[in-house]
Length: 451
Image (cartoon, rainbow, N blue to C red; front, side, top):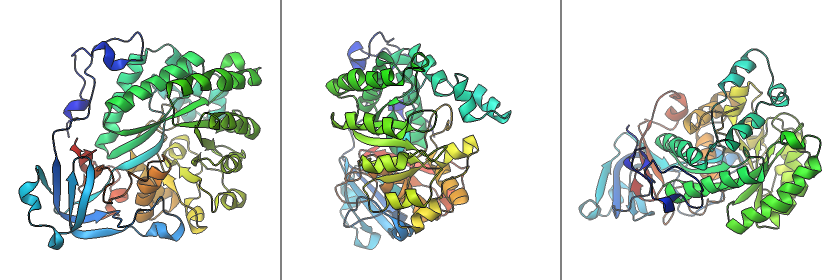
């Protein structure tokens, strides 16, 4: 499937105004925009229309995650950017095929919401395959970080990369994940680790929001690691985050959320609470990197801070599960990071059986998960974490939307929700994780427009 026209790179110059407030950028590519020339789309003869809701929910938890509502032999009617109606073909109003601007036939295919990837780092400068080789040779994630690799390696590269080049490469990655069915994505900063570079990253994300048809949320992750120059001055860097970065970010409206890497060797539970409390004063809700490598206390801090999500969670026991039960915090699992780093997988089965909800996300980043392939994440969830296919689809759609705070408008097939839809060439739900190496997403519709 060729990249959609409004995603393609070209040599056409971009007007200077298109990239404001990004400064000192080169104008060599077309600024992508969402097309708005289709008023209505009818998808008919759908083998199965998945994740349908007559009454919308914010998320799905526990045993309910095994149920994926669906309609066989269905139609879906889209007007402008919204889902207008759906049902069985027998109940389809006979005038719809006559008045539709575009009609698609989904015979023998699945139709469902696009994936909501609630944890990525896709604005970055350069790959880190040299560290991949080091891990093959036995180096650990912590050893690479202590030697100046990992996050610090990415930060050094990003600080020396122009905003335009960051924008251009991230736009390419958005194209890539869209073709695999992702329609909403959260993007974090955190590879800047200085006032200037963090602001640069967040401005790039702001421009991606304006340019891309994907729904994008921005997260300030200045507390991703300690910069080398602050290695012996932790309090100095935290003060920089709180007293200089946060005020400017708030003043420019650059972030939706705030995040901290609460982990041994990075930020402690107490430091995490301090940073998140400061972010809350600027209206930034918490999201936490928690318990990836150790039992860090990040889950408990997340619940205390009313975090929207706590992410990673390779290290989860009874205390963490009990802490998360009956809270508003979504446990978000990133199995492709565990896969790539050869870490133990998250105990998803145990968490769901205890009554928790689960969201799935890719952690797309250059060091520990260099892929935005949500179908592969769904496959890992099934094969390695023993999630059932229905559970994994729920985790990658509605629960992922919750973890981005977009569940009222995305993540399910419900009337008046935004029409972010994918048509998948698969005979059943189980075929999606089963056929993990195939490109199954055939058609993507975002904001009611064919992409």
